[in-house]
Image (tube, rainbow over all chains, first blue to last red):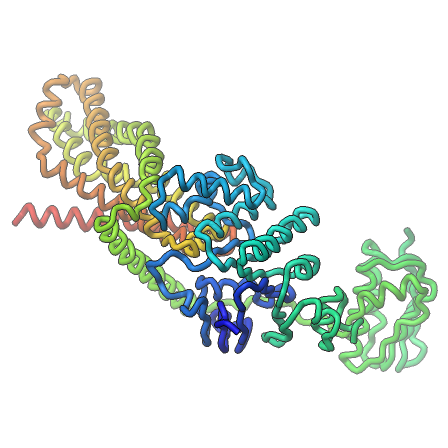
Length: 248
Length: 374
């Protein structure tokens, strides 16, 4: 097996005296759609912040492509990130948002940047939105534009925070199709934080489940396998949308 | 909807029985609560609440009943809700509670010494953050000189326009009025001593050295500093700053540097305008109130105001511009917790900046005074 793209070793995360997860260990292999799932408040998005270098662990280690994502670097970023709200810069057009990393990290002429921007926007189904302001886009379109921006520097790894949150089922399914296509066609490794069951089964090849009460990873594997064969009542409750008491 | 008809019967010293009737809902909640409380006497070892004549119950009634039962059980009193019809039993099951009503949560009052200590630590922490931010800014500026390409120049001109050109009318008007006020206040005193023409000296020196740069900085702080803090605060809470970081952009050079450079460039220009308008305000009063000639007033101003007065004001204005950007951006980037956090940080940015401006002005005044004497 190749070296894992992401290695998390004994990660304890939280802030001040509040621990969200303790001694988490997992790896993400190249080419996976790796889903981080769990109930509200279990630390999914916080874990993503640690994986992307936006937060420092209380203890333990995160390595992304062999380096600590928190370390300052003069190199272009090794991965792209789509935030829950899209986080497009409100004073820039969609095209400028997508072109921002290209203008920063490459010496491409402006026309070439525009060509790439248009292609990325087309890829995510946002043709003719280059000159549109983010405020004019719907929630789903913002997320698509954010994926286009995350892919601007051709990373082989992208992180997606709650891509389906707040979207209608059709838009959510379309976004899932896009993620699957990016993984299948472009070989992109995708790390997704979500708790949308439909989405998990549509896109996930492997997952970990975080638990708020025990502050630990309580399951790891193929989401469909876990749904059908897990004996853990917490895992079964999550995958079968049932309160724990009813299952036990 | 009929009100419940409670009937409390103490069958013996040890057993209390409450019979409820009709529909139990939010409107009859108080009566239900009082009825149940009446049934709870010290010696009762068992309380039985008969619900067989209750036709319906809503959530609030179920909450009161189940909470009452939990409360009594926690005291060792056996409490039973009996005879509930299926619809009532269902809602009671939904609101099932094993927890007695806890004490009302109260915020522990902070002692005075504690408050002073907390505030002192807060101030020290804020000061530490501003100094650290200043350090980052200096490094950012050095990097900008070394590699100008890394600065987000695209933001420079729009920021300069918003902070500079758009502020021209308000800066001009306020400084004109301040010049008029100073001259009007002094006109009567100077006239008494036949020293009318010295109004030009008084207005000229005070405006060019102190009032012009300071009033301009205060206006820019209120307009632009608050806008910087709110803009960066919103970006922080909308994850836009995080997004920039993950793309390899430090907010310092991408967002703060263009603002700092723009403000340091426009502040002297606005200050020159402020100086001119302040003197114009004094001239207007001198001509209208004291019958001074325009030529005479201008000649006296020229004689009284030295180039060093003018340049000291301009140097101050550049430092003011840097301070406004530094504190506003630092406060904005420290925003957490949504709209409320942005509001708090914007207020803090304006208040801290105003205090700092006065402090810087005082330091400069002492410095120039000492250097003149030397």
